[in-house]
Image 1: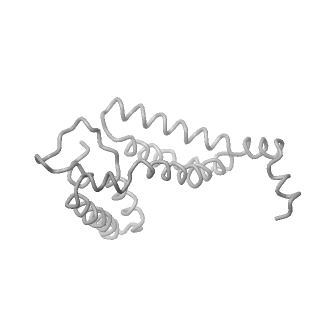
Image 2: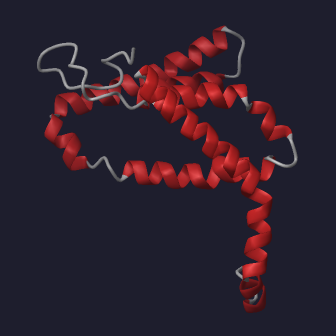
Image 3: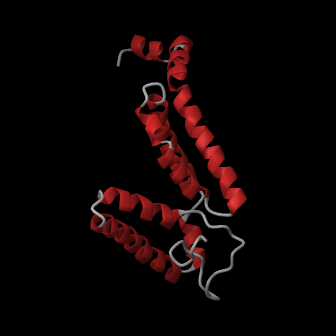
Length: 164
């Protein structure tokens, strides 16, 4: 890329134009996120579940030309940044503190749950990616810390504890 093209890309007028193109879609995803957070607090369930339900209900927005660019930016760029920031919260040291038996249990249950979701989606004659998406969501959903572990001495993992 030439230097002049790089400079043109970061001019304030160019950034404003790009911002006005993606603003409606980013605003709609922000509203969905805020609504999911509110519903999560109100009904005491993981916000990811409400975000998925609201996202499915508002899926038709992604087909509209006005919202599509911002939704694409949110679904790709903002989601990748969010996942990276979330991943920074979990370190190998924290996994080691839970014990290697817990780490082994997580390493077994995560692929099993995702594989089960894929198999169920295939049995329902759906694309397997839908099953992987819903299984991964249920596997990695944040669980409230106030609920006790189902068995004494068993560390809380998404596979070992239902969210309801």
